[in-house]
Length: 236
Image 1 (cartoon, rainbow, N blue to C red):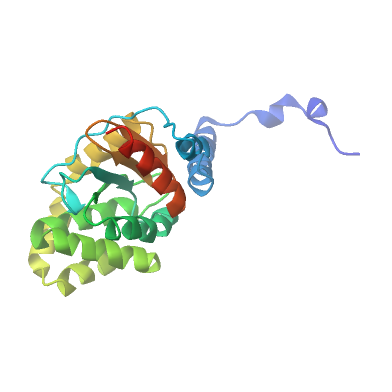
Image 2: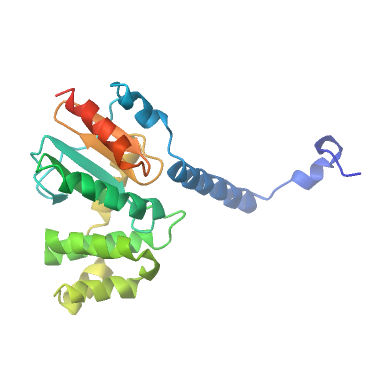
């Protein structure tokens, strides 16, 4: 006969504060991973019927963003991403196809949302991306994104440095930037904007227009992204 919960001595459930904190972190991390792997269907279900989820409010696209296309495009997909997140690499080709096939009507902005509690390499990868953008320009930034999402298993400080040098960036300039990390406030600001708009995991993508913003929280397939995009267009 096994003990049922009511027969277990209560002393067995006394958990020290440090262990409780660790357990809480594990629970939160697990919830984030579950959310990313199983995005809430309500995020796009209403869009398929022509109705949108509640509007969010993230900063408008701007010239300093990492962007493919024009910040003045009618629709901009603003993705808050984590370079170590497997679901970000999963959604990467989906968003790329949508933007490539839009005839310039949809642009793509990528901002930072490293989930440092579960992805220990995410913060360094975000810093590397910002340094590469600053030293090599927007094209090199997107080369970095493509390389990382093509092979996340290689992600490391050494790999990021190797990529920067392969793009023609000075090794000493990159090393100086990576060490000083002058873009930490930008990374934290991006993450704060995502959280303020309901982002609890990555990818967290906002379908943005001048009239309306709708969030797509997860790695949805292309047809469901298109449903949200069309619904936002209908609000123009």
